[in-house]
Amino acid sequence: MLKKKKIPQRKCVVTNEMKPKKELIRIVRNKEGEVFVDPTGKRNGRGAYLTKDLEIISKAEKMGILDRQLNTAVDASVYEELKQYAGGVSYEK
Image (cartoon, rainbow, N blue to C red):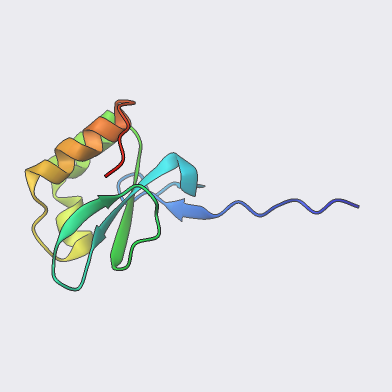
């Protein structure tokens, strides 16, 4: 009998919905206090997940949800990068 492969689930910090990890974007704050988008989902640091949706990213920015989750001020450039990922524009650093 074939075993089903377990799909990792994560919770979006805005909607509180559990979704497959691939459908979310991870934002990380490392020990130095830098906040950045983690497209691989494997970088070290405190992470928070957002759904890949422009409305949800805008809501997170307006309400300051990422600031609270990561215990630091999140720069506007991070939100711009998130909007690029959600808009379908993909690039690797």
